[in-house]
Length: 393
Ligand SMILES: [Zn+2]
Ligand SMILES: [Zn+2]
Image (cartoon, rainbow, N blue to C red; front, side, top):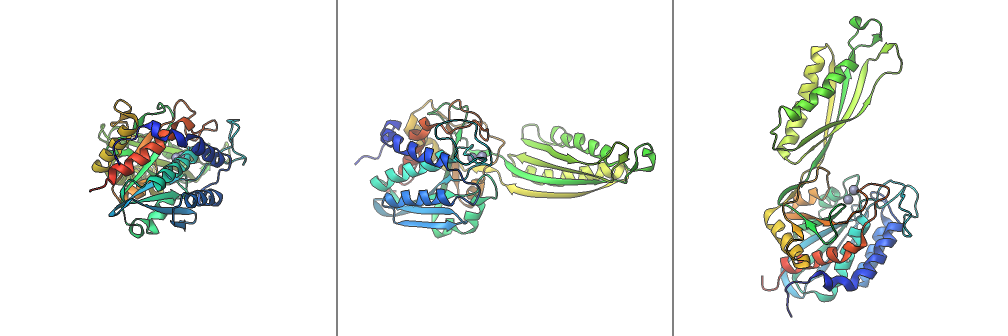
């Protein structure tokens, strides 16, 4: 037996079957934790490959399945796919478009699930590795933190997972290309609310009131200086006010303004900075006008942080599929967030991007996962397993 490189051509024989699975999942999208039909489909497929150890019902509808390698001992690595869709009305008009109005696989999680199933079929058949592979199928990536919940329900310890890996398709990147970087690759996501409290009254007599709308205007503009004047220009911090509501009439200054917004950053220390400084800044502005604020800050998703050693493994695996020239190992980080970050907090690992060609953007009603990417994604998983869990190590 040889355990060298398996180029993408090795996985062409799975393309038709995995494409059928992908399109079935695309036609039948499900949201958040309510992915019961998807989980049933995944479980049936895994069982049909001869995989015996399948645990269902983790974080409601999540699944972890273990494939043991051809020789005993060795470590266990986790490979993760997400299963949930989005509340979007599909506009693609493809023959396999969503059959459920208002629900759509607009982030390609149908492709992620199908590709991990394709890798499972190959690995269960060949078992050319030492140790075990834990296939992690998670619900609720788009909302409600299914990845965090699977970690909280103990999957890393229970299945003895020592490293964990994730993959996401990327529109705009050529099919057959991979993108990755060590360190932060996707941003943290936090949310905040500010209620600016003034004192309402007649709009013709502003001097008798404390106008919360004027205060809110100063706060909105001023918060941008926390980024431009108080943050290291080489670091990334986004502060966006995304919701604003106040007032009901032309002639009344309201009592208060409600604002909401989001903070995105690639540096954990900037989350502490943003949380502290947004409150202090808004309070300071409000005080100067005689008003006050109520402030609430919620940390949602941490930075998706790629560990050095595991990133090297991922790069090696991707190179085995496509060869040099098609793996960008210094890709720019994305300012979106990904709840695989919770798995990377629990165990060292790496998250990689897979080219989806010139498709519509993620979360767009015209988006579709590119089935031409399937042999590359399957090939990445298989080469990763056989690289990380080589016989003799
Ligand atoms: Zn998404
Ligand atoms: Zn996604």
